[in-house]
Image (tube, rainbow, N blue to C red):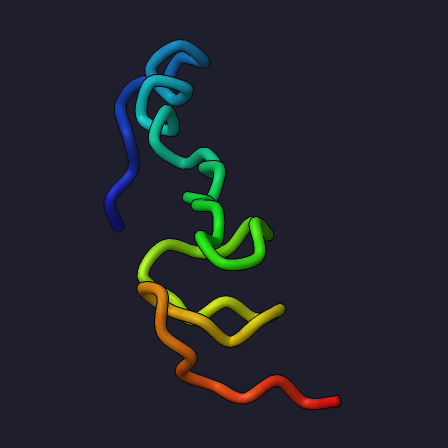
Length: 59
């Protein structure tokens, strides 16, 4: 069974975990209604993408 010879220090352990951070999601502004949306996705509020109506809004 593999057993480490020396204890992994806190600094070394934490250096390995530097990339395990939750990143802020990318947000763009809808050009039609001004609501924040995900980039390259249809706006959930108005249904527009790239200035064109893609999805009809449910009333």
